[in-house]
Image 1 (cartoon, one colour):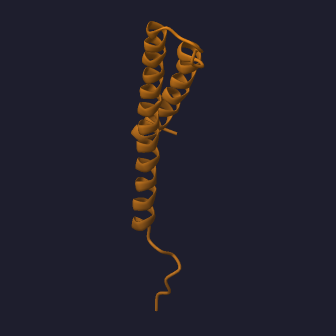
Image 2: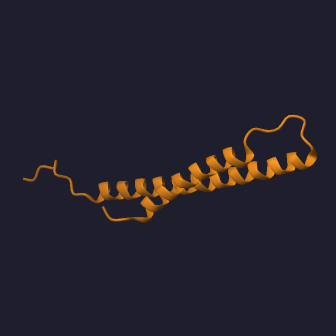
Length: 87
């Protein structure tokens, strides 16, 4: 199977979603109780960064899936039908 753009988008999108999730667990984690403003700001920064990474990955993943679906539909529409009876 040769590499395609849709495959690349699918794999890289899935990898970015996983990386964003791991980043969120590693750096942001759960919010602290009774935080100082500096700790709250740092937690918000890391949470937003993890969300952006996951959103970018989900967008790439969705584009890859959509691209693959469009290619599949166009190939199905271009395929000659074998069920037609010829006289």
